[in-house]
Image (cartoon, rainbow, N blue to C red):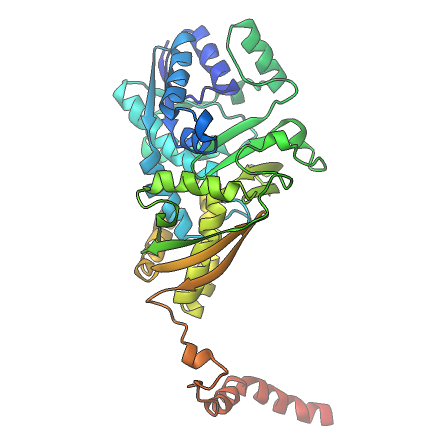
Length: 416
C-alpha cells in the first residue's frame, strides 16, 4: 500500500479512478485545484440563479471523502493561474496552431506543481492523474512533475488499463460513484477562467456540427443580441485592466465578467481538428470569450507600439511559445527565455484598445498609447504631411541595388 495524491476534478474519470485506487488498498489524497471554473460558471448564470463557487468546490471535496479518500483538499490557485500562466501567455499572444488559446494546457503545469506540493505536505511518494494514453495532458503533467521533483512516482491508471467512457459509467454505477454523464450527453469537460474545452461523444466525428448543448459560455446565433457592445480595455505593461467592466474588478472577476459580456455575443467559439503531442489528430471544441477578446486587443496594441522587426521576430517567438505550452514544455529553459524576451518591451505595452463585440466577432475599433510609433504627421496624405517624399527616391535606388545589379549581369547573357 502506498500514499497517492490524485489530481481530482470530481468528474467521471477521476471519480472512477479514485475508487479504483482505494479498492487497490492505497491511501488516496484527492487534490482539487480551484482554477476559476466555478467563478466563470457562476458569472455566466443570471443573478437570480447564481451559484456559489465555494459550495461547488466543497461538494467536490465531500464527494471524494464519501468515496473513501484518505483526505481531500481544495487549493485556491486562481491568482497563480492568472499571474504565472495566463498573463505570460497573453503577452505571447499564445494560440496553438493559430486558433486555440491554450486554456487547458496552461493549467496543467500549475496542477502539477500543486500535486508536488501536496505530496510533500502528506509525505506521499506517488502522484496520479486521470489522463489516458491518447491525450496531451499525460505529457504535460508528467513532464512538469519530473521537472519539479524527479523522485516522485507518477501513475496513470487509465493508461495502464484503458477504460472506455461506457465502461467507466458502468463501473461508476456498480460502485456507487455519482456522475453527471449520460449516454446521450457523454461530453468530457475541462474549464478554468481562461476557457472551456469540450470533447467526446458526437464531437469525435469532425463532420458533425457541435450541438448547442455542448456550449455553456457562448450564446447561439439565434439568441445573440442585435446591438453591439463597445468597451475600452486598458493595458499597463502588457497586463489588462477591467475598469470598463466595473471599477472594482480584480483580474479574476474581470476575466469572468469579460467571459460573460463576450459570451453573450457568441465570441470565443472554436472548433478545430488539432494535432496532439502524441501524433494523433483530434477534433476539439472550445469556448474562450475573454481570451479571444484580450488576445485581439493585445495584438492591436503591439502593432501600434512595436517596431516592424520586433513584430516580425515576435510572431515566430509567439508561435514557438504556444507550441511549448501545448507540448508540455512549460518548464523548459526556452519558455523562460521567451518570457524574458516579452518582458523586455512590456513597459511600452501600455495604452487603451477599444473593441466592439457583436455576432460572434471581436473588432478592434481604436487604439492609442503614449508609446505609439505611429505619427499622424508622417502618415497623413492631408495638408499636415511632414514626410519627405523626395527621400524615397534615394531609398528605392539603394534598396533595389541588388536587383539592379542582377538585371545588368543577365543582360549580356540574354544578348549572347
